[in-house]
Length: 79
Image (tube, rainbow, N blue to C red; front, side, top):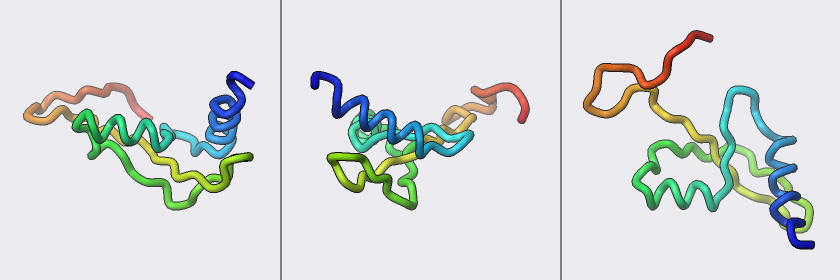
């Protein structure tokens, strides 16, 4: 199964997603930390259960809409 693990994890993350949030895996969180963007990562309170892997910690990505040292919003639009 070439894509079995990745597809299974992605499917479970999709089915446990929260509207209006971007959910990320541990690997993505680690990458963002290494890139100096650890402040974007918020650990999800509950772990998700993935078949064949057990419980898995995921994270929400929350990016501040205002760039550092800037008074201009990076995100436009309304809710």
